[in-house]
Length: 325
Image (cartoon, rainbow, N blue to C red):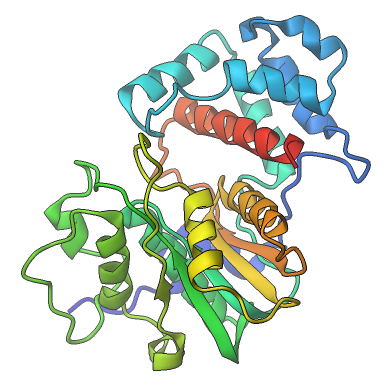
């Protein structure tokens, strides 16, 4: 049996102890694009189909440009071959200095570093589903935040696991499913006779197999797994589908509560934004949302081209949701 992984094992755990909370944003309080957002577009001006829209960089104009040029191909997964080819096309020709500028600008926007909430107590903990490795990362970052008292649970706090229908990727192999390294297996955990083939079952297995703080093993904190279905014709259930499933099937009882959106960067702001918009549409806008998530991981995105491509794709999705509010 492996021993408990020390906080210093991963760089972001060290950062988690010392970093200030990061708050992502793409607009000013007046609803205008932040200068950093405009500067990002200008760094890719030579790649834009309609660069003339940058003469008047309104939120709607930047949304239009981002949907045309930054979004990965329709229905492609984030790390699929066609998505990576798209990222490479965007970054090809950029100098190393400009690439560093892009990363620095996204860091200023709050999409690179660890994210911690400015308050500690929550009525709802919303853990967003993802790949097996990312779900473990999100769960354990939340668990360590709980241990470090950056987050506190109330006696009636509800943990909601926002996972949904998605066939596991070929990369989510038997070894990945059974070996949680660098995290630790829960004492006594036994692998099921039939391993998960879908994110919904994988989320349940991942929670059960990880060694978590004793508080999270109390029955009252066992997650509600929403098991959202995907839309007709979609590759998988999206964040939007999962939030809708939570609200409609397990409606929040505290309409003035606080909810913590657990993800990892560069997706913390995006998933908070999607959740905020849907809560407003479904008449739950008085639930206040906060983000929590680990820094952008070079383990998941080792190539700077892919990092920049994923950041741009996520920015496009942020702009689409924000300008549609």
